Length: 145
Image 1 (cartoon, rainbow, N blue to C red):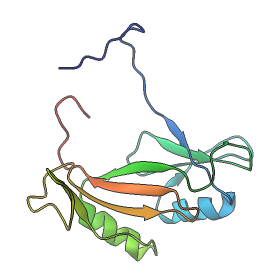
Image 2: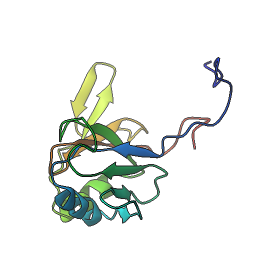
Image 3: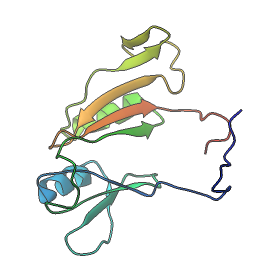
């Protein structure tokens, strides 16, 4: 079983903020606020938002804030009930793909028949094309909070 130690030691390391490459800061801010993400206090010119229940935020800013091309990011957005989450996103005007799930042979259409945790996904994109993979995780693996 893997351990959490390395040559660096065994100190806590957390991902707090991910930078999203966007072309229009105001449009992106409005999109994420429409999803119910909290607008955080940041330095001038920087926008930071945090999804409900998340310890990790996203940031974006003016041209040059990141060298990445707008729309080039992909990240997971974990939810406890993917059906409820997808319905809420669609109601907010977001285009969300149909469900698909992991099988031993790859991805298959639809919800996982057993609704097993970590299996079912759907995707959506923000106005720039950054991709969010919704993943249903109802029960975490041991050692995960």
